[in-house]
Length: 234
Image 1 (cartoon, rainbow, N blue to C red):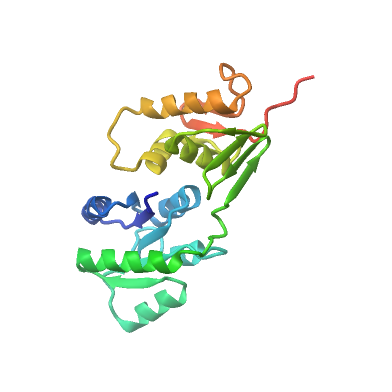
Image 2: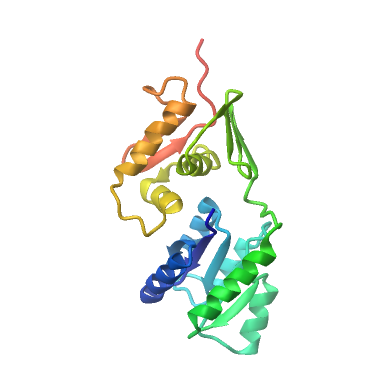
């Protein structure tokens, strides 16, 4: 499975260029232009690594890094125009794994990403559960195995990823755009009905009555929400 990289930088041209180059290298890339947006995507999409600019418009990237590192081993590489030693040391002390000063070569960035990802293997981020239990649905994330009412249910890779993201955030309405970005990537330019098709297939596999869904429900004008357990009926 492709490693997921979250890129947080307010430079639109740099974001587009890095996303294009990293996707060519086989990474799945998500992007955010503010610290707040980056924190939200990191919490929901569970990336394998974050490329983080220090000079963000809404908050200092070092503060974003501090929040990301609370109870997690999520790898972070700083991207910044600041190259003095004080910034470098303060960033690394916050838990960042590496530090690159703009402008940098793409080859060097990819080499450092590969190194950090290799080093991070075996570290289990606290916010990346290997097992998700939601009522009568159990997901073994590492084995990519889904149990529904005690039965193994075969799922296509994107069906599993979609269910994992929904089940990890029960009771939270997740936007259609976010789900498409997290599962298909920002380079997806197909019909957004693709998401609806996968939701329909998931409902056929996890709902007791797919025609009256009560586990994966539609939130009008927003997207979809996972309900941890079906309501009991007398």
